[in-house]
Amino acid sequence: MTIELHTWNTPNGRKISVALEEMGLPYTVIPVNISKGEQMAAAFLEISPNNKIPAIVDPDGPDGKRVSIFESGAILLYLGEKTGKFLPKSLTERIPVYEWLMWQMGGFGPMPGQVHHFIALENEQDRAYGLKRYMAETRRLYGVLDRRLAGRDYVANDLSVADFAILGWAWRHPRHKVDLADFTNVKRWYDALMARPATKRGMDAKLD
Image (cartoon, one colour):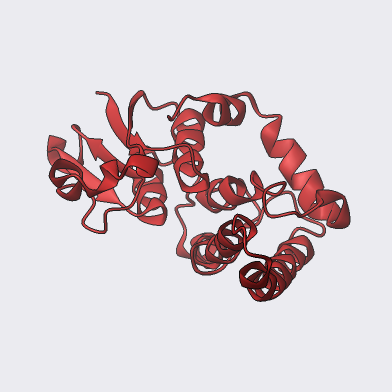
């Protein structure tokens, strides 16, 4: 049965479209125009209590029952569990997946997101402090990722939902003014992922 993807064209939305394509799951995009405040609608609140995209509705959830999931990290873990793909079976192998997924959720998302906010401000005085602070932290996080990818293809050794989560934000590197040439391991990882046909379909999917 077809999964409903309630989303918009954002890094967090792209994480899920990429995962759905890589997992071979049929889905329908239901755009939620966050620029018009559609995420505040009562119907959307029922499936996303925090009024944030993305959210999914799976009509064929556990025990064949309809289920909704919000928060992109939770969605990725759910989809990994549902399909048995990109989420290792052994707990030992899951540990780095959990670590790097939480690293993305807690840092490599919120910090570049702040860059996106401050870079859009017109008042230079308002822009200056925020950009200095959050650009420095964003570059530090790219450095962390670059070191992790030295000598390995993916953050948790095998391709996993953690890579999809991180890719969603690395995709916006031009917007937060990061040149991937400065982080050679990240660039190699990024280019390899973006060359995957399913990932490309997820990135090209119309979400708005």
